[in-house]
Image (tube, rainbow, N blue to C red; front, side):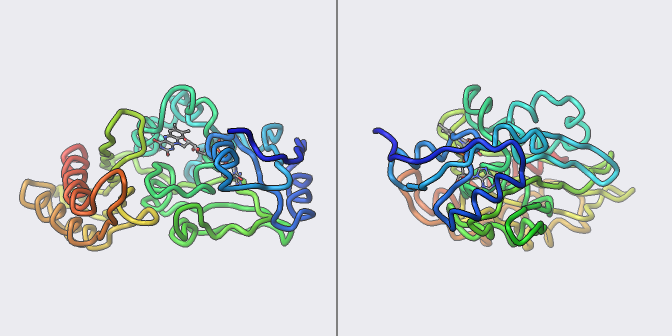
Length: 284
Ligand SMILES: Cc1cc2nc3c(=O)[nH]c(=O)nc-3n(C[C@H](O)[C@H](O)[C@H](O)COP(=O)(O)OP(=O)(O)OC[C@H]3O[C@@H](n4cnc5c(N)ncnc54)[C@H](O)[C@@H]3O)c2cc1C
């Protein structure tokens, strides 16, 4: 299907990009890699008057690793994350999750900011953001602000972003060296969006008991979820067979997935328990 007509701008500074969005009062959209926006144009789900291409904004392409954690610019692509060997120790959970994103071609163009703004409930990056208590930095005509990932996702394609705001970066808190983690997802074909997925980490004490459990799931609600009930089961216990079974049961009880064309709600509920089991086995 042909795209609807639109004007096109390719600014060379973030300030110019924000000014263009602000001047078009909700009728303009940022263009990152086009991996979701172009299909949305083709299907007439979106018909902006102007596309503001972010590809010349070099400041959005940085990956920074410091004592304050990992910062990913909005135009960092999936292949940039997978190619950066530093991230394998600086944030192995991020890398484990992004290994499941789509296929080679899409990983070469799809971006961190595009995924966060698109807010697909089954996407890996939003799930990691919520699980890890990330901070999402945005800039608009009213200035810059930082939104907690827990407050960012409002539903499929719906976020806390104002129409004139651009995501500039996402900041993931520091990753201690002894941290345990696991990521598991199930998709019908490798690279498809997950039918359900689980991301988790914890910091065991010297006796091997879980502390600081963080558990998130994707694909089972209208947005990525953090499951406090599962974290409560895990904290203070060793990761053994009994704990894993209890955590999986708590996860199944905590979600209420809808039926859709890809899977029934009951199947997704069962699947999320299995994904929690697998992620915990991997963490252990
Ligand atoms: C066949 C296929 C399979 C896929 N499989 C997966 C998968 O398994 N897992 C997964 O997570 N993703 C998957 N994706 C999605 C893909 O990885 C991209 O993350 C996603 O499509 C966003 O693409 P993009 O970065 O090119 O953004 P675009 O398509 O350019 O933009 C998407 C939306 O974000 C907005 N936007 C973009 N950048 C910004 C910004 N900096 N600030 C504010 N708004 C912005 C745009 O205006 C638009 O509304 C798949 C995509 C395809 C086509």
